[in-house]
Image 1 (cartoon, rainbow, N blue to C red):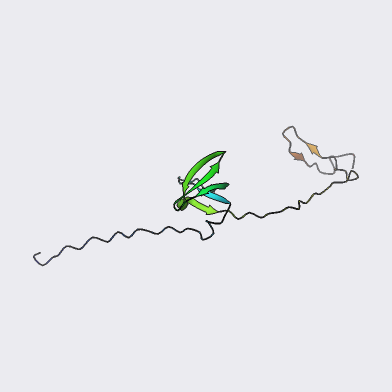
Image 2 (cartoon, rainbow, N blue to C red; image 1 turned 30 degrees about the vertical axis):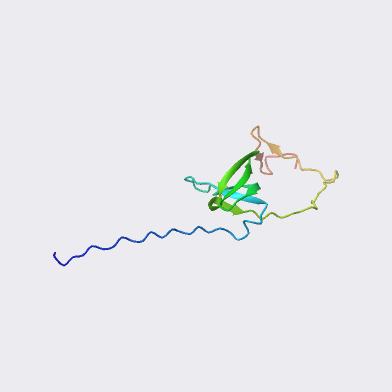
Length: 118
């Protein structure tokens, strides 16, 4: 027991937080939820527009209110700019088959021997 020596405490190294390299260029960001999530719950909310940037905090417009959020919780949102929208026009000549539905909206499929009109 006389030869036992105490160990030095571990040095506390500050954990580095990953910050995406395109975060300073993006116009919209996703905000991470810092709460316990249920199964299949989305970890990020957004995208929200960025109003103002600083070294550690971004001011983001969430539900029409400017909110300061740490860059540790932000992720850049890459949006696809599509100017040409695809419009599909249905012709009037196409007719939908007469589907039988219940009051709750479910489709009913009767066998052929129950339906006399076929």
